[in-house]
Image 1 (cartoon, rainbow, N blue to C red):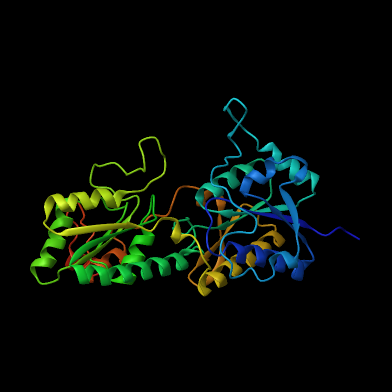
Image 2 (cartoon, rainbow, N blue to C red; image 1 turned 180 degrees about the vertical axis):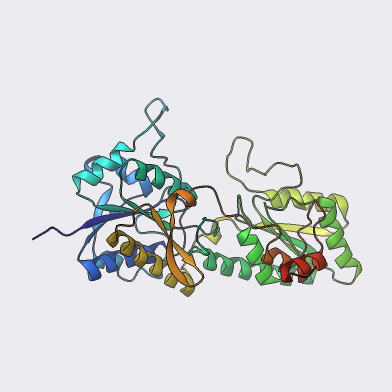
Length: 376
């Protein structure tokens, strides 16, 4: 009898609510529908670097039982391993992608599922070019992977951000303060935009729309003069003023963080208001996935197995509207999906009274409304 097909799955990049639901769906679909074996790769691509296949293990139904609601990933993850540039003993980057091919051959693996964001999909595309049969699954709390309308984990983080900002409002109102809430979003502002809309924030600062500190100051000062003695501002960690740099934790650190500290200082220089700031940080990543994300992740895991069964390698699972489909990994790897500065969500936020403090003066709710609804 022909041997059962064997496939592998890895979770790379940062952790994300819903990863275990994807793994569970892959294992269950592969076993229930086709009788395939599923192997898990530990710690993203790093699992291929461990000797004697120690970074890979067979996944059973017991391994994934009860994990659909668990946060994190039972396989582990890594956002620091570039399989094409692994430092040797001297720190010199070396291409170790041959380890992937060797492991696939040793274990007789017929396909690899790469769950991750655009960086992971970029590495997956390069492995595909080297002959590794790959299917991708988009993963990011930032919701910025090209080709899919939604990534699992995003709904969960918006719930966390929305609740956090809701709690900030009571303090802002009670003490007549401007409260700045810094959220994740290095290159894109989807979290800040959705979180700001969900909580009714007065201002939303995102990477795609450079802000003007003077415009932001005028917004919160005007609210005070009209009897609204508080304001809440949602800030993407990658937000920056026109012509200004992004804010890093330290001068020798490549991690963003602390832009809300700078904006608070800018507001204090320009107003007499009391300003406070909070950085939500990694609390946004953790915890149990929302029911929506559990369903979406399960659908994506199931569809990844169906793509392998159809021989559709080089494709990434994608959600378009309510339909599960696919998108070329090569295109998904071409950088993040950004918030359109003149898109409908930005226009609707402005129509509802939120400002982006746009340096180019584009914060015109009436013009945005006309653009949104096709009026002249």
